[in-house]
Length: 451
Image 1 (cartoon, rainbow, N blue to C red):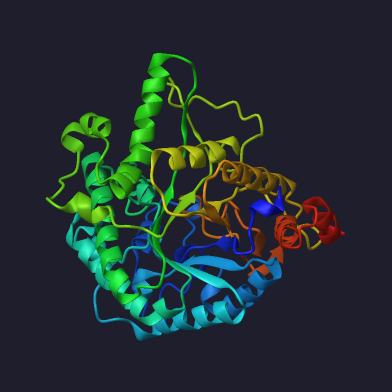
Image 2: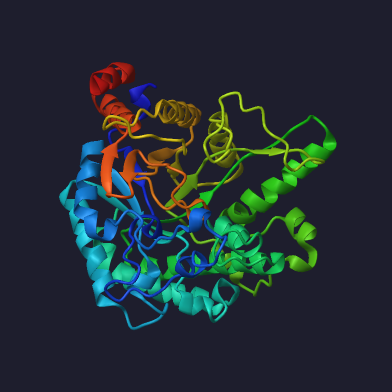
C-alpha cells in the first residue's frame, strides 16, 4: 500500500460502544436501557448472556486506554450511554455518569489520542421505550436535549461528534425483525422509526452547530453494496430494491433531501408519515460521513438464503469475506452523492479465537485487515476522500444477540478474569500503522513485531 496516499493526518483507530464494553449497568445512578430489558427475555441472547459486566470497562478504563497506546493508534471511537447520563431519558442529568465520561475523555487526550464520540449506539433509556420509544416523534426531541447535555460538558475536547450509529439496525433489526432490542416486529413501525431517527439527527445537528461550532459533526451508516446473484432481470430488480431499503433510504434524505421513490412505492401503506419540512431538516450539512462495512448483499430473487461464492471464506458470523465490496461501495458513493470526507468507522471480523500459551494467533483476522485496508486504499487511489480507518473492535465484547460467543476484538478478553491479551492482529495493526508513518514496508515491520 503506497504510503504517499496516506498523509500524516490520516486517523488510525479502533472502535467500541458503551453497552458492549462498560458493564456496571446499575452503578452510579445509571438507569436501565432497552438492551438491559431485552437481554432478560429468555431466548433473545445466545446462552442468556447480558451486558451486566461485559468487559468491565467502567472500572478498567485506565488499563484499557493504556492498551490503546500499546496498539499504536492515534484515534479512538467510543459512545456514551444515554441511560448513564439521563437515567430516564430526560432531565435531571446524572452527574456521576457525566463525570465518568469526563474522566474517560481526559484520559484519552492525556495519552495523545483523538476522541471520536458517538451519541447513540442503540442503548435507549427503557423509560423512553415505555412511552413508545423511537416510534414516538417526541423521542427525537428528547435526543436533542441529551445531545446538548453531552456537548456542553464534553464538546470542547472532541475530535468529532456523531449523532447515530447504524440507524438501519435500530429500525430494521430492532423494530421489524425483532432480533435486536426492543424486539418488535412491525414493518410500518420500523419505517416510522427510521424517519424519526433521521429527524432526530437533523435536529441535533442544528443544535450542536450552535453549541460546539468547531466540532466536526456527522452520522455513521452501515452500508453494503447489493449484487445480483445471477445476470437475470429478477435478481437485478431485487438487488436494486435491497439497495434502496438498506442504502438509499438513508443516503438520499441525508444528502439529497428526499426518500427514494421506488422504495416509497414498494412500502405503500408502510411508508412513514413525513411532516412538512422534515426532509429539509434531515439534510443538514455534515462535516463527515462514517461508513461501517462488513459484507456485501448477495441477492437471489427466488432464494433469499442463497450463499455467495465465499472465495475468501466466511467469518464466524457467517458473513462472506468480500473486500472488493468496500472499494465498490466507496467509489459508488463518491460518484452518486456530493459527500463530505469519509471515515471507515467500523470494519472487522469475528473468528474463533483461542488463547494458547499466552497468545492468540488470529491469522484469519490479520488477512482480513490487510485485504480490507488494501480495498480502502484502492478507493482512495480513485479519488475517494477517506480520512480515517477504525478497526472493529478494540476489545472482544458483548456482541448483541450473539452474546460473548463471537469475538471481534484485536484484544482478547478472558471474561472469567477480565484479563486482556493483545492478539497477533493487534501487533500486525500496530506494525502496519508504524509502516505508514515511517514509510517502511508493512511486511518487514510486521515480521519484526511478531518476532
